[in-house]
Length: 307
Image (cartoon, rainbow, N blue to C red; front, side, top):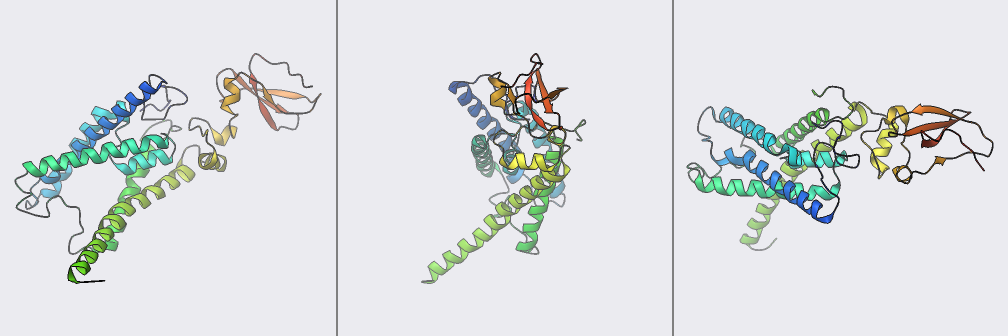
């Protein structure tokens, strides 16, 4: 894991490795991300129609097969896209601002295309799919209610996302890291499918993901504090590498890039140099006599004159 974000200050954590800033470079990056997530998602869903569910050990066999393929998928494409594989992982990574929202649809497109390709292929090849119509379908069993299935999906998503967020925390020192009969039948079928597919299998994981993101970012993160939470929700230039709990909100990056001083105060007011902090290499925090932080200066500019 690139916990120090060695690939550049402006780049997303744990995911995208940019080699250029031009349009061609970005298009090439998006294509690589799309293909990487497509490949990983296809690997992950391969066992869906290939495990004989009549076998008493089917659950164990499928769990082992899926876990092994997931490991292989992450090993293969992690350096390219971060190997999100699951759409809720991409949602969590986006909500925690590790990647820009413009990349999220590319991840999701690759994941859904990969799953569709894998399922179509294995359905044609599987000796079980045509004999058992419900093979590979993720529907609640007869003994499971819709409410139970919904909360199981919420809980599963919550646990998965919480673990992933903990494993990718930049601040941790160690990663643990009505009508005729046909119309009525169609309406009932549509309501049932919406209830099953949307309410349970889409809404459940999304709610679980949102709860996990809020819990971790607001309370469990190593740098958790109100200043960081406010910056995460409102600051366009939110910096995950900055220690908000220690240094507060960082100075504007635009002023730093322009190599301009950013000090506010009155003429003749006395200022004190704190020493270099984490505003960035070569920059020094400055405070006034009352202890209020007033801005930053290049470390070479130690004499301050206000007019």
